[in-house]
Length: 296
Image (cartoon, rainbow, N blue to C red; front, side, top):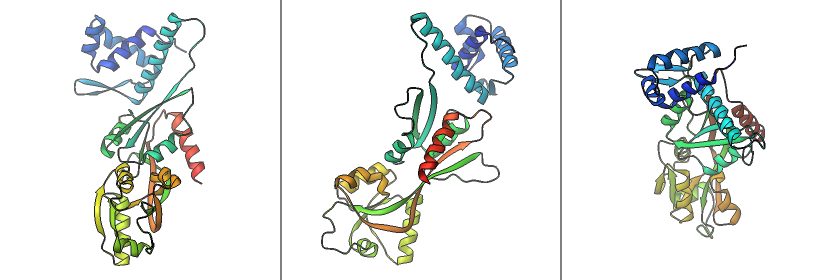
């Protein structure tokens, strides 16, 4: 078993942060060839390539991402040792989660619940578009992506889709809006302005299909691609909202909003997307297993 050379590890961390051999060499005040040689020695010692070359830049490989996490931990521990000899810092693991910017915050919190309050886990949560998040997943800057837009799956697709929840969708509004009126789906759609998800969402596609089967044409008061905005529009009494109850569970529990009718055959599917890795983050499997068990 070869002994890890910490000097090589320090050079590797500098290259990983700068993205180029030239910049790292300049910052360390040594020659570029020396940096290159010692990085190759580290790769030979570890048995894996740590970088992929893209143009003039060096991008961390999957093994490189793991090596950088450990390098940061090693040097952080050294700094702590210098500061204090009282006790060693508890080992912390990092889980990097990407969440669709329009995804229900309540669902995100429910997903994170097994990790909240744990001293050994640090959660990094980033939001963005589906395209940007999936790019981050492939670049290994994210461990898992939470979404309600299921990515296309074919033989060329790298994505592994884990179904986490299949939530009902309802017509929800302020408590007195339908006082004395019929609460059937057909009656509400025929008489009330609606707050709807935008047409490109899977939720809207299911609702439009239901309306076509019922032969109904809705009166649209507002459309939004953000669940948080749908929730706020419902609270502001802009109309009756088509929304999963989980998104407004706090308002339903306090009586600020009321669930008037459940939409048959319209469901909101929440999923976690990962990709196959040689070195998977064990926290991903841990949280997925917990979530899937709770969903059964």
